[in-house]
Image (cartoon, rainbow, N blue to C red):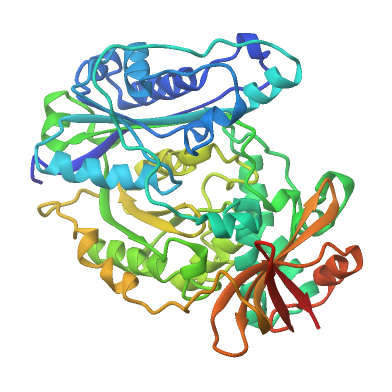
Length: 512
């Protein structure tokens, strides 16, 4: 085994519940406690902290939009990676604050693996967290918190990353995750030819096993077990958020959770006398982006880039999907899981299971950092049986950005090298997209749609449609007529004809 082979040697998770806001940890505190768990997990603790030369902090959700801090007035750590490092006794050369996206934890594992293999990095810590529940409680109870911290030293801030929505799309409600993923779901249902009733039952059966896994996971924030019927039955406690998703089919971001992993090379692990039983190897990885804006998508029931990047990871590992023993599919909303299953060629009820954490609605959705929990959860399973393989998919944006990792405690025997994602991204970029009109007029049909709710009351219909005259795609809202919006939740709308009018800066679609 080559000394430059990258290896994961520690993983940790931390959860904070039922703690008063003024006694609770700030976000970097949660990240640091997860990092301390990862150090302990390595078996050599503080000795490893002193060896860390690179710290990547997964970007906080509060720093993930152009809106300043999402109106949360508690301040922040100005240099998150160095704030984490200080708390654990590390003094890294490289301090990186990640860009936006749920794909980034896996993406940074891939990057660090390559840099370790190329001897550019010695020991890397990837850590992230959210303390959104604490912030919510503090605001609700008018408790002032001071999360401001300053740490000297350089920081590479990778910023917001790729532009995933246009101002035009956002005007109509597209680009908000709770309103965008239902657009995929309704398109998928129509593509499958399901009735609304049958499809809802399918959604409940899909997510019931996720709830079961979360119920037995000590790091889950919402660990109550719910059966399929509970998940799909709309009640005051499980009200519609956006059709067809009731509350418990949405990622739940009101959490205090953190995760961390530590990576190094085989040679460094040997030098530090880290027990080889702790080592977990990256057997395959891939990254690819679908068309980044919703208006450009090839369609709304597939994710070609997800399929491609999983194929690249499997090819690197020399494996097929049937060889995988454990999965954690990114599960912010059911459509993300269903489309991943479709692209990977596995059944919704695959006997291997689709999650090792419980998924974002039940385990919790800690902003950009969820997939780091998935990776951390994989390590003990793989160490327990080195013959096993685990596959993690990570998703950023709106099924926009994808990253995949395949892990095993079986040693990687050849020279570690991944295919550069830039070599296969053009395969997706070159796929044709429908032409798009911001000012559509005339007859058209619904390509996909959703109805958004406010406290259980339907308030807006969102439509992506195609003009009858030339096939151009458009986005629009429907009239806010309560009878129409109710009907849109009860009868299939995909393919429904109507007319679209662009006037006074807004597009309105009126179904026939």
